[in-house]
Structure formats: structure tokens, C-alpha cells
Image (cartoon, rainbow, N blue to C red; front, top):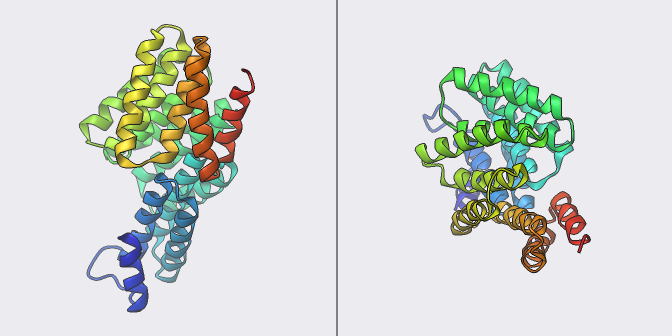
Length: 278
């Protein structure tokens, strides 16, 4: 449907029109279309829409939209596991958000950068970015994406093996996502919460598995294949830790198939590395 609206505006040569809106609708549609396509696992379609939106934002000199497109693109590349490309777009988006004084988005962008750096093993850099970003986002008083900011901040602590802090922050993210009715974020957070519980050694593995399964069920209803596949990977890891090889292999096989289909190579390599242990 978003594609159809974009095509209609292209056909009518109205890509630059504001239609009495504070921002150009065509660029806005490209941003949210790209986010939707990426979260459904159609990364090539997402890339195409982001590029169209980026060009249009530059042609209309829309600074905020330029930044929004970079931040959105960076976050979809984050989901895909293309860390270096994600950093490139997030850093570009951060500069544009700072230039346009779009404070809460600046905070969210910093939290996203923190998550990516922690995934690259740059733990202290990741924690510093995420803490700074969360502080800025909370001070701005805007609820949009705040659950994500809590989650990204928590995950940087998980990557540094500070499981107690990670659990508290991700639990806060879960509560916030429920309060704000951000169902898709809730599903993703539940998978992360289950992962943290399993690694901490302070929670029953069945409770950790339950959180992940609830998250997968939520995401299945929304068709969010990248996060669903990550859920199966987490399940595979939890079952592996519990010496349940049958369920581990079954879930890792599901994850591997999905990652291959979506060309999510980082996550595919992680899955294959874990499968090779059996």
C-alpha cells in the first residue's frame, strides 16, 4: 500500500509537494515504507525506499527528514546485522539531528549506536553512547522509541556481562513498550529478556524459554521475520546450554533457513557456528 502511494505521487510528479503538512509526505512515506519492508525481511525493498526518500529530502532541503531517513536506515541495517553500514548511517543521522535540534531523535540515535558498537565488541564505547542517548531521550520527555532506547541501553550491559543491570533495563523497556502499545517492540524485547535470563544463571531456563516463545508468537502475528529468526537462534542457544540437543538443533535449523532467505549473513554465521558444536 505504501508502494502504491509512492508510485501515485511519482506518477503525478508531486514528490516535492507538502500538501499543507509540516514535512513532505513522499519522503515520510519512503521512511516508514523502508522501516516496514526491513522489519518484514525485505531489505532490498527497504534500501530502495530509503534511497528515494533520501534523494527527495535533499531536493526539498528537508533537514529533519534527511536525518530521519539516515536513522531509520541505520536501524534496519542494525536488524540485518550489517554493523559497519549501520554505523555509517547512524553517525550521519546523528549529525543531522544535532544540526536540526531534534533532541529526542538524537538520543534514540545514540542508543542505536551504542547497541551496534557493543555488538562489534566495543563494549565501553557502546555503553557510553547508550547511556548518553538514554539520558537525552528521557530529558526530552518524548515517549516515541523510548522502549527501544531502554532496550539498547540494557543490551550494552548484557554484552559486558552485567546481567543484573541488563535485566533491570530490559524489564523497564518491556514495561514501557506495553504502556505505549508498541507491540512489535514488545516482541523483540521479550526475546532479548529471555536471552539475558538464560545467560545470567539466576533464572530458570524454562522461564527464559517462555519469554522468548511469547516474543516469537507476537512477532509471528506481525510477520516480522528477521526478529522471529533471531528468536529461534536464542532458543537454540538456550536449549544448547541446557544440553537439550534435539530442540537446539530444531530451532537453529529454523533460524538458519530464515537467515539464508533474507541474506542476514552475520546472524547466519552465528547460527552455523552454534550448530557446528553438535
